[in-house]
Image (cartoon, rainbow, N blue to C red; front, side, top):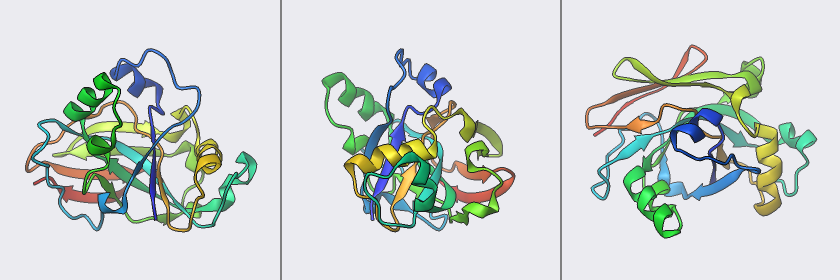
Length: 204
């Protein structure tokens, strides 16, 4: 399986990163399966970064093999929705961006893709109007709604499948809203879709 992720997919997040020009098509990057962090296991801050930041995102699970999927047929290719946290070594990212270098070491390191369990798509009335939020130590630090995505889930699937064959079990991180910030040792992270708690774990 593979993990695909979309960067810069919410207007306000682009603003907080001082991205002056909005993307005209989805910005994709990948994480290996070794990045997965499941079952509410703790996230360990790596020793190569002094500024690891959280990015809460709605995630979807691919359920059919597909290539060059048209947008109108995209809903046939995912069956589960959850929430994930794309942990980012921001200090490394800034260094890499300045040098025009690839992002893998700041985005795809071990444990950098924390994910919840998946719920059936039918569990929610409309996944293109999903509220979600992240609390740290009991305080909401990020909140968003999928209707504010620059590229919705169907557009993401259609675009990604032009370049990568989507396979059963693949996971797509669909982008983070504004409010990203640094995590510290002993932080308690809880992530919600609507008012349903999906993740509950600690930083070590």
